[in-house]
Length: 344
Image (cartoon, rainbow, N blue to C red; front, side, top):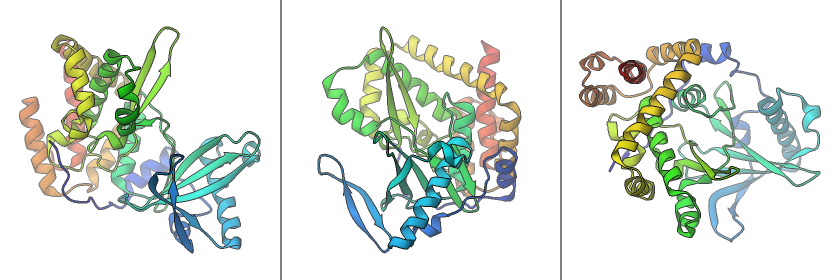
């Protein structure tokens, strides 16, 4: 079972990543930053509809500060969603600002509500971490999911990713047995493959969501990562394979029960081929991103050597041992996906 024993510290955005963000429209000016939200006078525990403590706390600001902060947060939401056009969201208001006290970076969650129909949405304000930004961008380029986020200085703005948290799915949805086991198992196999190829770690059930979409004759499932802090940081190969986390045992057992070995290999190959297609479609941004990752430090030297060694054995590819940093290891992993395509 993979286990992350030490709390990962945040890596600052380096000049090469900063240049990438500016070139591709991720860097922008915003009217308020993470540090401004820390000026709340106090906070109170936030409970869900069932009265359970969510471990988030609602921040309370002084009246004058609150009006200013709420207005600026609406401006940021407009930038994130509609390019800054405030007229499009003039019927929206900030309902609540929560802070997560158990997260690595103490993120803020902003709840936006529609005054006309009480519909709501969220977005997040966080301390920028280079590892997380690389993870977000790789998700945007190489997964079936698009990611909306912005960076300004040392502040990261992220959209909310909708879905049922994996641990909640296991606890509340799975026991009802109202799902297509084979389809869910297939999706977990593909999610497992995506995480491994692009080296996204720590994908236990609390760090991904399950999206459930009814189709005209069946239900479609998609598993989406929601935490990208462990992008190519750890030195052990199994950290990047969700199948090995004890929290994911339900999904692993479902695969074991409903997917034959032949089908398993087919699903893995399918996902690698699809990722190759995505790599080709995003060729130039991906090359620029990997170049930036290869010029900046986002993991300790020990982790780099250990991971290169384990992947070289796994892929039977000694050239991976020449990798000098995590960017080069990610590049080597992606090239292995290309090699599978060529061998087909």
